[in-house]
Length: 504
Ligand code: ADP
Ligand code: GLC
Image 1 (cartoon, rainbow, N blue to C red):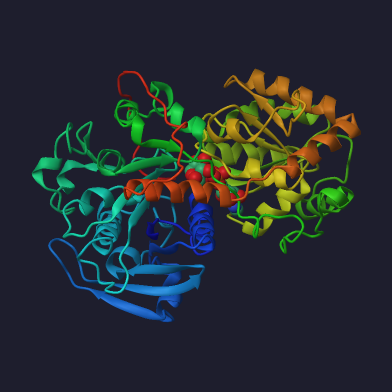
Image 2 (image 1 turned 60 degrees about the horizontal axis):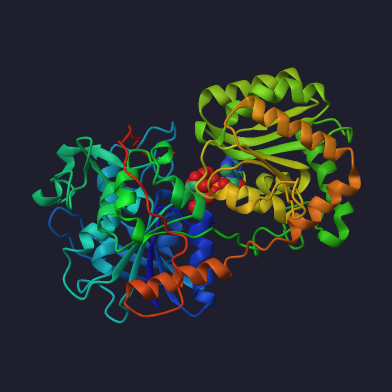
C-alpha cells in the first residue's frame, strides 16, 4: 500500500510526547513490511537546516485561501520524510503548538488547517507528486483533523482516509469566525450531518470523526472508554455512532531505540540474563541526580508531561509517606506550574531522596528507565502510554492505573504472569495500597527478579500492530483480508461534556 502519514510531530526531529515516537516507529515498521510510506510534517523553525539540505522540492502554488508553499523531501529512513515549508505559518519561535512560554500560537487554526489541506491535496488528483499516488491518507490527532474532510472536496482519485486518535482530550476547537480562513463550506458549519461545529466552535477533532473512512485509537481499552461519557470528552455520542468503524490497536515500542541491550544512551547496557548490570545504571543515576547511594528501598521514577491526565497529584499525595519508607524519587517532566513547584519543593527539602529535572531530555529519559526500580504512571486516563512498555523492556516494574493502554499492557504482580503493579480506583489511597505491595515484594528479591524477567520477556514490538494497520488500510480500500473486528464496541447514548482545545 502507498500511505501518506500526516502528523504534527515525528521523532527524533520533533517530539513533545508519544505521538512523536509513534509517528516514526509505525511508518518504519510499515516500510519494513513492504509498504511505501511518506510522512508529512510541518517545517518548524528548528528544521530550517534540514529544509535547506532537502533532496527534492515541489512547489505548491497559492490556492483559494491558502498561501504558496513547498514540499521538501528531507530524509529517507525506511519511510521518506517530507516537510511542508511555509515560513509565514511554521517558522515561529517555540514549539510545534505554542511559543516559548507555552502559549498557543495565535495562528494554530490556519497552521494546522493548512497542514491538513496539503495532506488532502497530495492524497488526491491534485497532488504535486505525479509519480506517486496515496492509497490511504493516515492522519493523526487534531492538528490533522481536517484532512479527511478536505479530501472529500478534492479532485478524483481520492485516497481513502484513516484517522488515529492519540488523545481525545485535545480537540483543536477554534472560534467559528475562522470559517473563511479555513475555507470551510457552509454545509460544514452545523452540528449534525457533515458538520464540524462542536458547542459553537469549529472542531478539528470532530471533523475527523465525521469524515474519516476509518477511525483508530491507540489501545483496545481506550477504544471502549471513549465511547462512554466519563472519558468521551463530549465526543462519546459521535464515537458510538461510528463504533463499527472504530478500532483499538495497541502502540508498540521501537526496539531499535528502546532496548537495554543496545541503548547507547545508558551508562551500562544489560539484558534479562545480566540483570545485575542494571544496578550500575541505578548507581550512575543516583550520582548524576545527587541522590544518596542507598539500596534500602526502591528508587521510583517518573518521565512525563506533568498534567492532570498523568495523576501527578496522586504521586504528590503519597510522597511524604514514600519518603518515610526510605524510598527515592527521580522525576523528569514539565507541565503545570503547580506540579513543577511542588516537586521542586520536595527535592529541596529532601535532596538525598528526591530529584527533579524539568527540561525535555531524551538521554535522561533513557537513563531513568534503565536506572530506577519502579516507574510510576498512575494516569487518570491514558490512550496508550509508552513508558510503561519501555519500563518493562528495561526490567523496571511499572505501577499503573487500570485505564486505556496501561490496562492492556501491564499485568498485576498477583497473577502468575504478572509484570508490574496495577490498581483500579482513581485515588491516592488506592495508589498507597499498591505502593505498600511494591515495598513488600521489594523485600523478596527472588519474587522481584521473577517479575522483572517476565516484564522483559514481553514483546511490545511494532510488527504485529503495523500488520493490523495495514489490514485496515486494505479493508478501507475494499480489499478483503483476514482483519478481525473484535476490538470495536457497540455503545450507548449519553450527553456531551465540555471539551478542551489545544494540545499540550
Ligand atoms: P504522552 O504522549 O501522553 O505524553 P506517552 O507515554 O505516550 O505519553 O509518551 C511520552 C513520551 O515522551 C515518552 O517517550 C517519554 O519518554 C517522553 N517524555 C515525556 N516527558 C519527557 C521529558 N521531559 N524529557 C524527555 N522525554 C520525555
Ligand atoms: C498520546 C497519549 C498517549 C499515547 C500517545 C501515542 O499523547 O496521551 O497515551 O501513548 O499519544 O499514541
